[in-house]
Structures are given as structure tokens and as C-alpha cells.
Length: 133
Image (cartoon, rainbow, N blue to C red; front, side, top):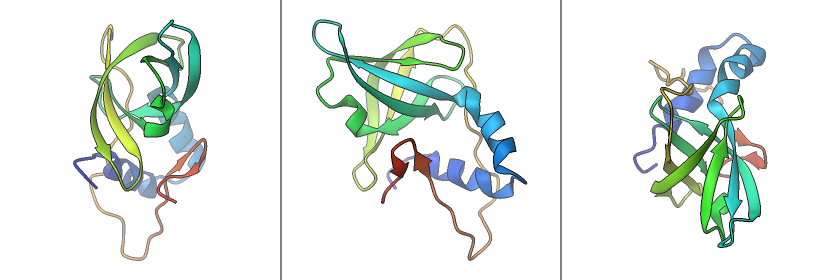
């Protein structure tokens, strides 16, 4: 996968004892993306997650189809502009982007410090189903 740190994020789930623990920790790093047309009217949306405290996010490229601009809405209802897409993985359709207007560090998913044991099954899911399927 091209320069994406999200692979490490998937591995982070392996060491957790329960899905509930992961969901509680991850909930503040997940956001809703709202896309807007050229007139500033809502066009569509999707979900994504922060991968660092500086506002780098990951989502699926389909969330941006036809959009003139986009913003994200965090769990605490803060709204930030999506400045630019900074990378794309054609195989999975995931894109990396930078949010702007942050008032400080944001919650992000943590990367793993070790690889999963051989034979461990790892899956990534979005609201639309498994990623890369």
C-alpha cells in the first residue's frame, strides 16, 4: 500500500482484549465527512478517521465524487475544512487528506508497535462494508 500508515492502525486492533475497548478509544478519532457542491449545498457524505494529532485523515475516495469542497464533523460537533487530498491508494480506494482550522491536537487512532502473529486474521471495515473487498 502506497505510503499509508493505516495498515498499522489495523494491526493495532489485534492486541486489544475486546472490540468494545477499541470502539471506546477510537470513537473520538472517527468523523463524518460532508461534501458540498459549488453553491455550498450539501452533496453527500461518509466517514473517516484521524491518523495523527495534526489532522491527517483517511477515508474512501468515493466520498468526494462531484464535490466542490468538503468538511468534517467530529464526535464533539467541531467542523473543520478539508484542505487537500495528499495521497491515494488505488487498490483500496482510500485517500489521505489534511484538515485545517484545528484548534489543537485531535484524537487519532494509534498505530501498533508490533506486527500480528502469523495466521492472525485482520480486516478493516468502514460504514459501507469491508475495505478493499
